[in-house]
Amino acid sequence: MQIAILLYDRLTALDAIGPYQVLSRIPGAEVVFTAERTGPVRDDIRSLSLVADAGLDEVSRPDVLVVPGGPGQFALMDDGPLHAWLRTVDATTTWTTSVCTGSLILAAAGLLKGRRATSHWLALDELRGFGVEPTGERVVFDGKYVSAAGVSSGIDMGLALAGRIADDATAQAIQLGIEYDPQPPYDAGAPGKAPQEVVDLLRSRKRVIIEG
Image: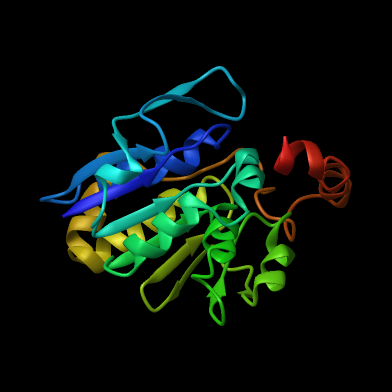
């Protein structure tokens, strides 16, 4: 089972690495990091590089596709070679997935039209412009399409998908193996929980946080 994780300049690292840490532990999984060009790709902070070992032309029939989000997503919204590749591989994937604003890339490629999906809460309403029904759920399954909300939710998506691909026991073993047992010091991880002044602060900084 090949799992292809898309890389591009200025992606959010955890969007890719969270699902990778989970999905790579499914028995029989083979993970490939792919990009338009091979080599290192800088994250949104510009201090971390992930390496694409394969070009898009070398990855033609992945079983699972993971599209992360990040400020670099804005440069990938126009139709072009990447969108053509997404549509081509999606024709044969078993699962096509996204984390955070990665769902906007899938939506711009026309793959989520008429479906339910989620994204980072600051970008959620932008899905409507592509004919997608946005939902504030943390992980959304709609047929073979699976979308996760912001950044850290990619781990939840990976575990939910591992349960579907393998079984619940395997997914639980992976969760225990990575000791994913969130106990944050603050209950401020969603706009409905965070203090209003914190929500307002992030809304005021939306361009910096989402667009970079």
